[in-house]
Every structure is written in C-alpha cells, then in structure tokens.
Length: 277
Image (cartoon, rainbow, N blue to C red; front, side):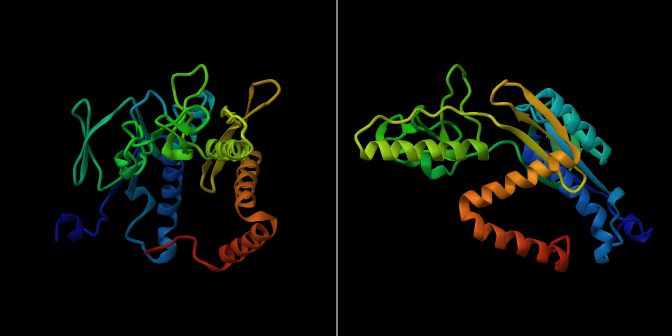
C-alpha cells in the first residue's frame, strides 16, 4: 500500500497511442468515451479526469496522409475531448511504464498502444522466390502480379502496389483493397479468356474519421472536379455509417446486411455500452 492508497486518491492512468493515423485518432476518442462511462459500471474509483490519453505522431501533424484541413479539425476535436496531441516526436524506446522520445524526454505510460502503420505477416518474407519489402509486403506490379512470379497475385495490406506518377505505394486502406479486388477479378476473367491483365489505378474517394459518439469529420473527393469537399457533424456521420453498411452489403448481400442491421439495433438496446473483460 502506498500513500495514494492511504489518502484514498485514485491512481492516474496514462495511456499512450503511438501513431496518429485514422486508427490511432479514432481509438483515442473511443478510449475517452470509455473513461467517461466507467462509473456507470461501478468503477467510481477511476474518473475520466484520472485517465490521461496521449496520441503521439512522428510527423508534424496527425493524420499526415490526409488533407491538412482534416488534420486540423481532428486535432481540435481531440483537444476538446481532453486528449493530448504530440506531433513531431518519434518514440525511440518503449519501457514497462514509460516511453522514451527521440529527444530523450521520458513520458509516463502505463498502457501503450502501437498504431503506427501496418506490417504483413512474417511468413510472407519467407516464401521462396517472391520479393518483399521491410514490412513483409509482397512487391507487385501495377497489375497486382508479384514481381518474381507472373502466376501469383497479391492485393490489400499484404501487397505493395506502385502508383503511376508517385514514389509511394497504394495506401493500405479498405477502399484500396476493395478497388484492387474488383481489378483482380477482371484480370482473372481476362486471363481465362487469354486477354491482358487490367492495370490497377487507385481512386481516392476521400476519408472519414469517426470520433466515437462525439462527431465525425471527413473529405469526399469529387470524381468530376477532382476537388475534395470537407464535411463534419451529422452529415459526415451519415456518410460514415452508410459507407460501413455498403461494405457489409458487398460482403454479405442486402438481405443478410438487413438482418445484421436489425440485430445491431437490438443489441445496442439490450447490451452494456462497454465490454468489461
């Protein structure tokens, strides 16, 4: 028992999220919501103000792959939810209860969450005759054929696909994988008919960032003008939910998605808002 226990003061919990892409930003908002709802479940010893949540990004702003206006809006919303936003600060070491920054600063962190990018399974790098990058992704051509074997294709997060007129590969995003699946389907059909493979060209339809129940911000890309439209609040939330249901329709069809939607409604009304296990 230490002094904090004797005085009846709760311990502060420091949560650090390394990586401020969409995953890290959305997770920070969900954790803040969770911290505010803990007393509902009898955890009165831990208040929301006792939970410190930090989002740490090595780049000079959060959501570095998205437009600056979206990044600025996300920063304002996180700060409004009492989430610390630390940018331009790479992490050099993770310890049991702290983080060591590149400049030597030590930050307390009882819970550290890694959200800085993706890495493909190690076994991909061990496949004979196939080329991978340092993230274990299979290197593919624009047609999604692997660079070393024309009979093997890869797409999604496990593949590093080049983009025309860019030195960066196709981003590992759901919409990219969806588009690649469509292109690969056409390529395989062409292959059966003795036709050429279909080159994949990524079309960015925009991004939506959901801050739990608080708000949603995003930008939608116009196919005709090539410009993006900034949206937020209820309109952005409607787009976010609609996009989620569209993904479900693509996977399960309209009927099964309708059943899933109905079950979600029933579960939300009957089950607790947090899973405490």
